[in-house]
Image (cartoon, rainbow, N blue to C red; front, side, top):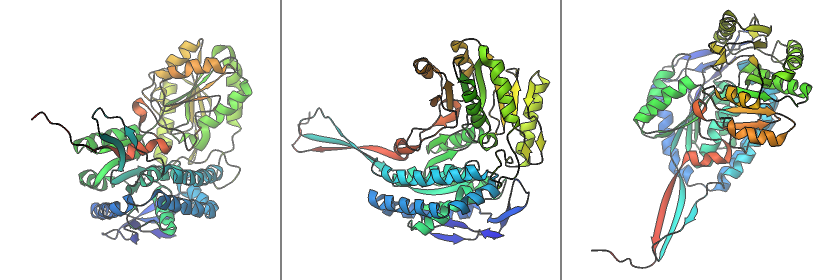
Length: 483
């Protein structure tokens, strides 16, 4: 069993109190690793290391930053299988999803190398003769990144790539449910790739002990940005605290993602997309389909085929390459998922598939006739649950899609793409996929939400979130003054 230290200032360090905690495997229940249980003092050390490293890192050239990202990508390619197995053990991710993450991550790092050249300014017109006016983007300083356990590899790196490409330094506080995959693996790769000390730092904490580390982040004047991929409840807390010290926040949050199916579709294709969108990674990613809104004409046919396909999905050990449905992250997640199914049923919903657990695995679940006062009808549930709801018109479909407070991703399935493009702007989500499932992403695209799904965007578009735009104005002639 491996014991991990935390990483700061270019070195691996024991927690100042010498404590560790057990990182548990969700499927087997065994201890995966022992992790440093860092303190507020450790976080202070890491933030100082990041602040000390910032001036030199901000002065590096785009080519220097790009070279390090290419090196990191090469390491991930070399360690592809190993890292995928770590993800499967630590987070319950199936091997197929874990491997996919490594491929996507390597490509993101390589593409991110090019983003170093996207930190562009602009020439501004001036009304004052003899003036030359420009806008320049300048890195902010230290970015504190809170990373999630779900999609831990790709999502954690996402909170690091854009900030460092823009010239900032980063301190990562990973989820206590995936401290290796969501943080310490970043440190290992960054160290091997040769990132200068202090540019990337990772500080881990024991379950229930995030408070002191977060306090240090909010109290420390060196921190300029709070960068979170996580849930709405956490985001509200972080944004409120950040507001008191005017720290900038970038928030990629959850979603209650609708899939609208119009009655001209190929039903079999829609079923395949719905199955993937709803149950990929056991419903534990922010882009999973939470509600399928389908025109009544094909509702019965779709539901029958969707139920049959869902019931056929193999579940079990995430390290088995045949497994599609692996475990939920912990027992609390299983209980929450089951409680929400029971709440819906108590209010009149019907379970068409699933609705039960086998040990750490919750069966993929389809609900119909779910009333709007059921919790699962309004709140994101990080589990394999999807609601199917029939509607009569396209206008009704849009209204149902928009009744949630979330606004991350959505999808529309129809053979009439003109109709889809008419409908897309009426769906109040940050992403609208036409004839693709809600789980759909491209590295260079502006992924991000609206409403309760946060603000800020990923990819090259995120450079603006991690830089200040400053105005530089120069005169070549003497100016006349009124006095």
